[in-house]
Length: 446
Image (cartoon, rainbow, N blue to C red; front, side):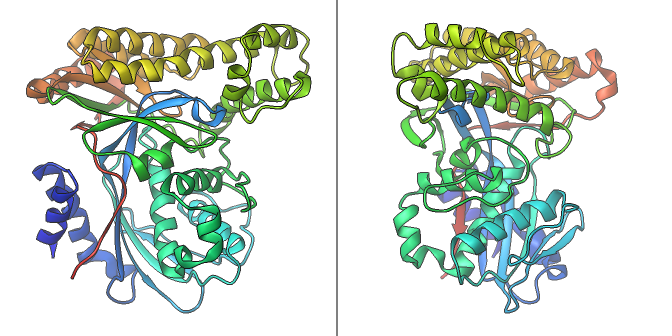
């Protein structure tokens, strides 16, 4: 059966090495999943992580992002149970949680238990009468809290298992509200962040005030391609082939960036500043806009309007903070389509300039960088990457670097050595070489 898993991953676009590594996750689940599952699995799924190439903190404001899935992710096996309880266990860290979707979450729910309950509770309330009882075992090779969307991969994986368990895709309201995978990605972003979705009202989320970029990448990105999206609503704009001679090297800074935990308040402040700008527009403009991006696109005078309104704004954010947040959004939102064009034309110089500007403005305008991510991005360029930038929520996490495919391993080793010399206290630094991988997948057997 393990060979069948590897064959499946190769068929959907993974390299042989990546396919065998993902199959090994399912071998672990086969050997140790009995601590979670009371019988053989009925469903097998894989949810990848993602790399945000461009589009720092743009999605929830209706902006653009250039995205790719990565070959690493979360393997998941599941089976039904009859009592309505959802039981999820991580076989690598030994954590096992059980939640009742029919009950509100106590305030002490954190971590895995919180995420599982958020997903199960939302499905239970949005699809009345559904039967969600399930046992789910997971194994992940994504570095946690590293900006690679391990939390959203968990949300997507658990949701997919429960959707299959309850046959939700056969219901009329499913087809009415979630007719495409892009709609599903937007909905799952709303689930994680506790937001209303058209016709499917909100319940409590995990505490973040984010968007649906991660869920979109996990569910829709195409192997070997960078995918350009616009958000609110989720809209696919283009898929650009990754040049064969280019490869990503992704390295963790060694500083965890748990956006639903240790960095949540700082992450939410960036999101809330964008929402404050959107609220200013809807308060003063003649017609409300669906998002900050829609407001800016509605008239050539939008920036001048914001200048006037920001000066007179009162509330949580000082005018200068709102100006910086607006400037960052406008500039970063423009960069994502330009980067897609640079991928299409194999323009290394353009990508280098765009990534350098993105990194510098994350430091000076968005304010979500720390010394470790700044150093890691700078050292990538000094070591020979033609483009590099931090990505994800910020305040820790990872950096991507683009380098020549034939030299990627040697580059990575030199880059990590340089980083460890610069900051010896970071210790071991997880890294891996990756080309864009396939989206979330279900593995079936004849």
